[in-house]
Image 1 (cartoon, one colour):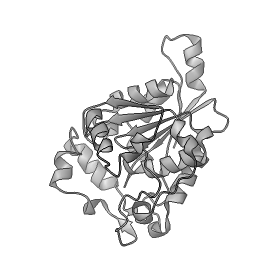
Image 2: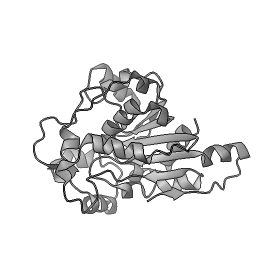
Image 3: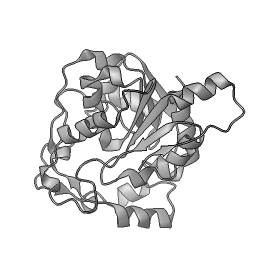
Length: 253
């Protein structure tokens, strides 16, 4: 599903034109589909952006072969969604979608004018989320524990938690165990914003400096900005208006 909003604010015509010429592709993390952006996408569309929320392969409710889906499939789907005809393209990746998102930057840095990492980070060559994972899928129940509920689920209502559980589908196993392969250093110069939610930007920097595997890629990028949005790991539900505002700022360049 995609929205194409009409900018109604009393902003100058130049600002209006920039928005109408800008596409924003929203990619959710593990277990989620395009529905995860339902509270954010209309807010961006109302600002005049062409908004495309994605459901990556294997994350459709009725998919029959999740175990056969790879990181390459996810990266290819993101690339296909990027509009070559847009004057400006902004890619927003949440959580585990940073892996195929980084692959897209590596393969087509010219197609992404700005990338927004939502409580996640660009990864390095050879990184896998969990190389030891066995089995065709990684269900939400395998990750759900008290620590996750108390930390990552911060600020979510009971209804939001139930919606999450009801709509979540098993993550294709190869997108969890598969390694990212990167070759093109041009990706490191693509302007990027890291929206830090479950941890602060100071924590992000400290963990990267300590060599934390998932965050080490932050050290490589040359055009990176950090923004704090204190909440849990799913700000598209807990702080949708604030997240939309931050994406708007990034999209405006």
